[in-house]
Length: 304
Image (cartoon, rainbow, N blue to C red):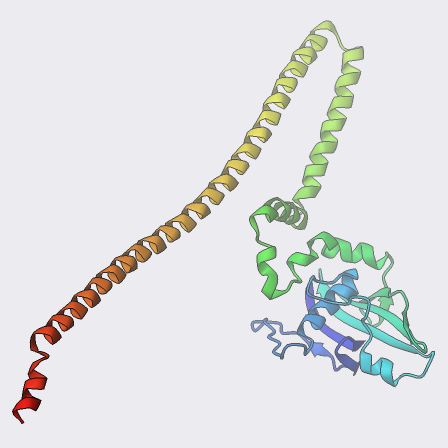
């Protein structure tokens, strides 16, 4: 899937119909969108996921309030306000146009929102846009499955949520599905089922030698299954031990930091004690100096 352009109309911060926002392509294929907080960067990203999957990111608040507030405020009572977005994208040399729209109705005290509707058209050789023969969700799901969209449309501030350690298995499954490996795995499972069915028939119609070999094969497969289950258990134990190791390493780092702080505290306490002793010594020296030579001041007054 290669995104080409998007148009918005009364979608969140985007009042009215926006110009066609064309995305970069060719050698300079990176589009940078700059805007202040609240300008609509997150809304723009969620417009893509709304059109294609009717899904939103975690940072997208009030997902039920999609219609632009200014458009609602200017609308007449009871009149529908349309909110829609249109995406043009290319896949396998075909150009598609995905369009999703919803409507809001302003009543005296409330705003009622209707359900959204998705349509998908494809460009023909003569340049006309024609509805697809299959359901839009099915076509989009084959191009980029809904379960994978969050790995392509995400908030940059929350990218750490995607690459967390506990998400490793989920990312692996998503990658398999994207690369078509999961289809091969399902085919292998189906072949295994067909194999078992044929072996069952062979046990019934086969000769004694065949039945003996099948019995030995069943024993070997049972042993392999037990070993595989044990391997899964060991892998799980290794993963748990790895998490425990990371937790202990983190605790040790914290403790080492606490040890450094304690060492610094001890040094400061020693300096504090030393300074107190120096202050006491200076005070005693001052007292002795006053007691030994302080009378000289009065002698000077007497001599005068």
